[in-house]
Amino acid sequence: MTKTDPLALTKALVRCASVTPEDHGALAVMEAALKPLGFACERMHFAEQGLPSVQNLWAKIDGRTEEGGRHFCFAGHTDVVPAGDVSQWDHPPFEANEEDGFLWGRGTADMKSALAAFVFAAKRFLEDHKNFSGTISLMITGDEEGMAINGTRQMVRVLQERGEKIDHCLVGEPSSIKQLGDMIKIGRRGSCNCHLRIDGVQGHVAYPERADNPLPKLIKVLSALLEPPIDEGYEMFQASNLEVSGVSSPALAENVIPPEAEAKFNVRFNPNWEGEALIAHLRERIETVLGPDGWQFEARISGEAFLTQDQYFIDLLRDCVRHKTGITPDCTTGGGTSDARFIRFLCPVAEVGLVGASIHKLNEHVRIDDIYRLSDIYLEILQRYFEV
Ligand SMILES: [Zn+2]
Image (cartoon, rainbow, N blue to C red; front, side):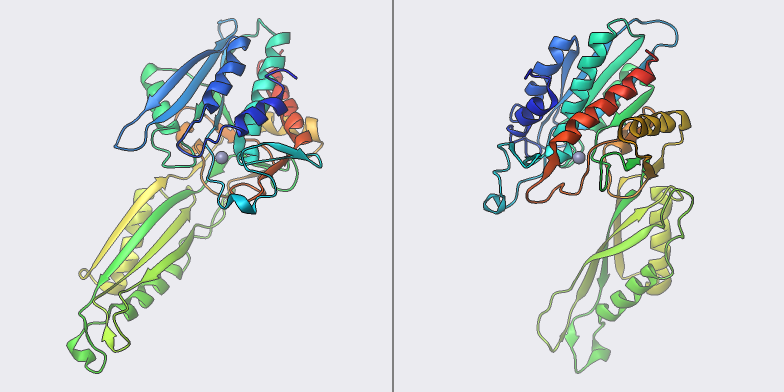
């Protein structure tokens, strides 16, 4: 087995305990696999905004540079979420054990196997087509699972400043649901984190006229935020969804009206909305119930919604998946956010990857077979993209 065999490479990556934002040698493993293939590797190190510093990797190889030669970028991350209670794992999370045709470990599905699958696809492509017309790059971050500030977001900014022209980007996130290739992602809902605080006046429950209880107001305003729904959804997108994630007030005693109450909620929204407009809409609903004063509302957009509309690229990806798996993938925009939300400012972007059923859980795993099959899909994509 060579270093670029996708299983060996996945194992080497999983054995780096790169719990976000730690690297633990994961990017060095990637570099050691990419440099012999001719990729120029550049570390991008960011440490802004007082956050932990993060290592990222920009790797690039040019074929012939001529009119019409396009730039294909593969994007992903080497960081992983924490393992949780290690004693609950059937296999230690950072050992990359094989059993029953599966590879076990943190990051196997999300998304070290996809990185390895792409490297192996690039290796085979370059062996046969040294003289392809265009550019292949990898944008690999160590900060996807954490704050996601000193990772892809900063890389995109630097690449934009340099005037780096990328034509299409494929993200290797685990997009499949039940079997490899049944789903690809072509957009994402936006995400808005909200915090509402309502002022009251503390007092004795026996004399409510001398107090001002914020809790009935909170109940009313949350009802008004939940009903009617924010929208009905459209075309590719499900309806925007508001979920209340926490409600609290200082519980002083059974006979005390609390001085304040607060709620936290999150809205996953479709591209009907720009984040700012959504926040204004929520504020309006709150004001209708509570009036202009006696409350504070803070909202933060952690990602705008987007939909990739480059039909050529979507069709190319679907055809390649169908060709290699016999399955026609559904195109979806559901689920959580990914770094595609930053990359879409550079070029059309879509996500094709492994089955994600076990991601972020105990006993994360992938089918070993699927790692090789995903690599075959990526190879097919490169071949068709560069028309070799
Ligand atoms: Zn991921």
